[in-house]
Image 1 (tube, rainbow, N blue to C red):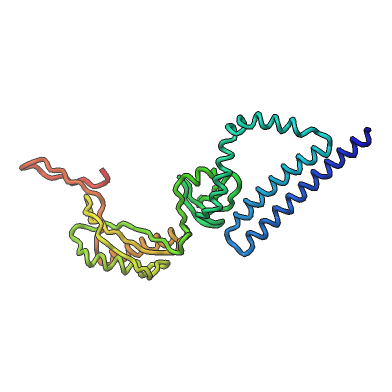
Image 2: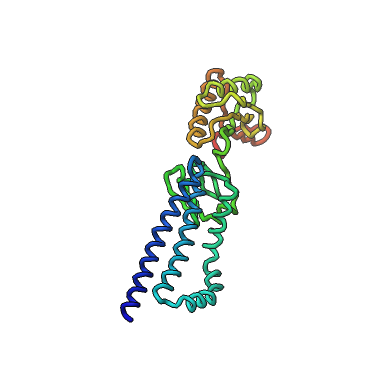
Length: 270
């Protein structure tokens, strides 16, 4: 009798170990088949992990039966506590479902630079619970799938080009047509600015101390290029305006105390 029990236990252990090996193989094959030749590498990872979990659960139940453990009462207990477990695991289930929906919609891929909520960075992984991104400060952030799905998703690399706007203020006595021409020339000279679509310079508003011109230009979509080109445009704009002796004014306030008094000019932000 003891020998039969020992054989059943050994058989159950062997089946369980075989299940683990099968789960690993299925996961790897799923990743290799679905992600082959595709830069969107998180579909195979997610489905592979899901298949592995299902195989391990099913194999564990079968191994327990072979080992002589009565699985029926255990399943009954799980059924009774299933409702309470479902309530306790709402976040886990919602993130799991959100992960499946993210695979179906594919708003981003591994390697894309995205913004979601208050976080921006490069997508490194998508699993059954979280989206892992690396921010531009080098910090790893784990975003719950449900929050990513519910929040607006900005994919900076979905298209090859992005547009950036830089506001430049000029003095009120400036020849605006000349200023616009200089600003467009500065964009053309800045490294990284695309010629098609061409840069634009439009008078935006009459501010308190300056006439503001919106300079708009296109560049490659990655964030590193965005900041590099913005710096190049700003340097070129300052150089062009200085050469033309066009003033970029700073905030000023003039205080007037009535007839016969002397006006007092105050410079600064306040």
